[in-house]
Image 1 (cartoon, rainbow, N blue to C red):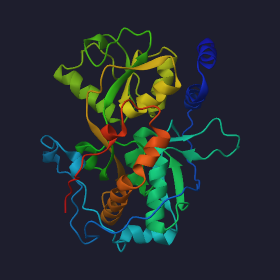
Image 2 (image 1 turned 60 degrees about the horizontal axis):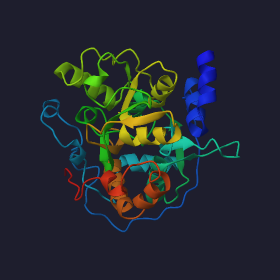
Image 3 (image 1 turned 90 degrees about the vertical axis):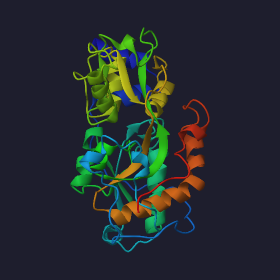
Length: 345
């Protein structure tokens, strides 16, 4: 109890509220409809649809050699005649797996005076744009809060139509779910207390306890680097792997771990809200966020890619300026996906 009292006293703003929410394991499934303004794109950059061979699934033998999983998605199309989109149109809404605890990405504003504080953030803006483009109404969304380690199972079981939750595109994941083209560029980075002697992703992590979420690319990277010798063998990377990344921040604030490894974009938002922690060292990977969908949803993948093509021209920068410019280091161009984008047919 003393640790919890110290946490309450030492944190300010969203950092404390979000941390306590995580302590309470707030991972309930919920459904909301939220308003947002959006504009429609102006035409397709490609053709295709349900009858085109799927190109998003990576063969097992490709994973060892694939260097650019972010370039393996299907060519964009405005065609809405596929079976997945037909089902969504029949339902009258899109069901989307999101986070509700990632500050400025997908979260509920704790300073809201409304009892029913709505979800908002960079990822949430993308969801509304997709609903606007496919269904003609940004309000036609049902959100489901899902933990990090349940993103893929939720898609495979068709509990959601897509996941928009700071999800990194990787070859390993491409064998289980389909991805859109990238909508954000980031990398793994270390988050530590300001008083820490850790200098970055290096030998100073020896004998330290590192937290990363179960099912995250951060955990995969830590495991691979420890096996290769890049990460000290004495670093503890397996004893603290909660289902949600925010839980790692709570453990760090309570002094139960020495460092957190997660996407730099998420870590930047957390560091901006909690003055007791900081980003340490430089990002040590290059990763891209994508919208994840079921492997058999080729038509939806192509349609979402067309939405993102339009959104990157008209909408992405406004959303970045609103949600992320205050927390990210440097200008927005370093967070944009590569251009021109490559696709599979």
